[in-house]
Image (cartoon, rainbow, N blue to C red):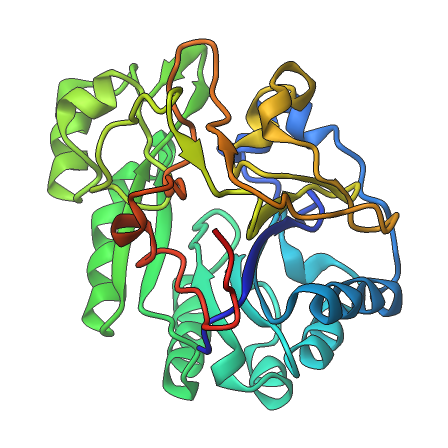
Length: 314
């Protein structure tokens, strides 16, 4: 995909037809209770078209909830693809062939997750292979090691990988039968997780289901450093509020003024920061962002944030 000028994570809404028992929205109730603004697809198009005219082409990483459950979403993406590019976290519970007929492959990357309680593997794989063949960068499927599904996970992983698509397994975080996971995994289950590539035993014992990359290093103390998140990156939650930190919703944003807010994209009050600011930290002094734009360490984070030439920002 083309290199963008700016980046957004867009939690468009937190609805999903699946309602998986292991979904983070069941235990992160502060997040799941955030209401979506409810704009129609035409209104959302005008919002993002206006941001493009102000800041240039954006890479929108759209998640939720299930983004494609939003009314008119696919047609809106097809229109926005004229100037923005996309990444989607999705369960693929939608028409992949309709999508490939409407959205050019250079404008979108698909990051699917498999949910065996709701989707049959053959139909899910058929969609994956179609989107992969059409050029939507589909090279990996994620799946959660929910205890009731763990026994079948090895076979699911083998079948997906047999078709040329890799699988990333995340340990389950949350309560199951009154026990808190991932600490509650048995020794045998931890061994199975290691065999599936879900992380070292000490990570599982500590409850560290890592975000986005199981081989990312430990969280780093960044309270004395300056971060450019907010000058070219923002996280937008369903009510339109935007924050400079990708982890802003996991703790009340009002508690940490360094997180933002940067305004509201739906109200027209959103503005990127003019200059980098000190890192948006928690009380434990750890950075919750897995790809922080630390000033002076651009060689490390530019591989995650491939900025275009037009983004001549700090």
